Image (cartoon, rainbow, N blue to C red; front, side, top):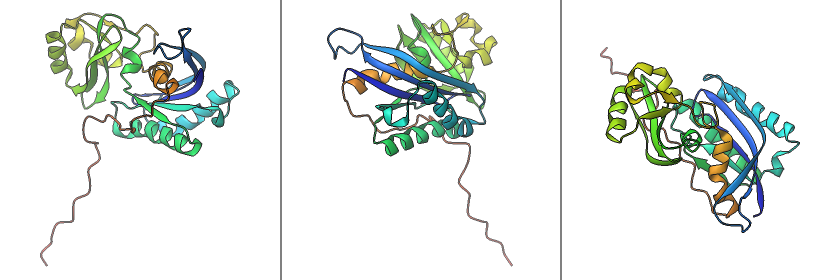
Length: 239
């Protein structure tokens, strides 16, 4: 393919993010693996409790801004987390439903890559995992070399120190600045926002889409069991 139109979504963090992007081969000879991304429209609203309400209207707004309709899409891209169970599955299920209805492939990308791919040098990316924990991964020149994992900030700092990581990006470290201070000042990705960029996710999936490689199944990166527990059978009561 010479160029494709991708819809990328991510709900793995408090931000509900949507982007519509044109992706094409960046080199004169197609198939080199290097892609060029042009953002057509993007939306991001930070509200951890309203992903289900926000996502589809944001998709509609992005399509309207780009003067596009769902049938124009060539593929879907979705952040697979890690993230909280409820919010993460909103994005994954929505992307899968769009793909099924349109007969288009849906490609999953680790959400932390939506931050880490825009960093330089050796950097850890962290996001809020709740329960006083953070999700994290390590990147070297934008390539993920460790993770994703989840853990207490203090334990994460120890692991990062062993891996000679001194810089931290993403909102997770900003929640625990005193704990991460021993590694150095937290840094933001080159693109500026502290949440996964759906445009970056589209770029990361772009080469696979252009090459026509079939996507892997959309398997969310929960990393731990959901907060909700299955109900237990009622206790026997003697009469």
